[in-house]
Image (tube, rainbow, N blue to C red; front, side, top):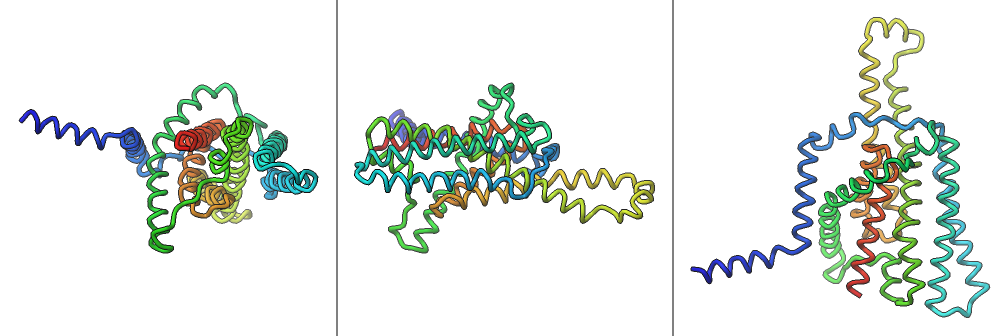
Length: 318
């Protein structure tokens, strides 16, 4: 009898891996969130839109600076320094990525100061909330991690059904470089880019600019559709004063559509389409955390934690 009990505990322990515990805990937190928010419908009911006067083209300015400067610098250095070895070329590419990312971040901050009602605070950059955002970001990533893993598994399964059993998801380019080159300068710059510069810039761009301007556009469009005729507006407001509350309630719900659209854009700018479903799931979490907290630091931390975990897993398995 005692032997049987020991065997049962051993079998149970074989299933009780760290990954299983993390996934079970994350799913529990996510389930509680679903119950408390009526499947997410009430989660952003009190999320106020961020005041801004951005033209529709504003988010494309730092995006083109990032893509254009990095591409141009890579072409120029490739022509001027063709004799570099493989790892030196990889190191130079990372330096260019870092400098281009910093330049794009600076431009984004400048645009945010000029176009948001409360400048950087309205943009979501408030250092007073950094300690709270750090810990809540870890909890947010903990809750969405199982969904990201499940999406990856489903993507691989669908890919194998379509393209055959040899189909597999390719690693991100930065993770490939870490596995390929063991030189410390290359790895340091890859970690710097992936864990700090990329999360900061991408969250400023896709959550701070794109998501905000998409939500603003949808709100203006909805208000234009549901507001009464201007000639009869005064009379309608006197007869139906509750209409203003209805307008406010409906427009406040534009947070979720903005999150979904910006998440699709975020996924599609990444070159490997096999990663798009998982990146979309992660991006929805990033967008939700921004709208819920009003702080851009929270999605930056989530993004950084996710990238750092991927890098450490790659280094550990190399």
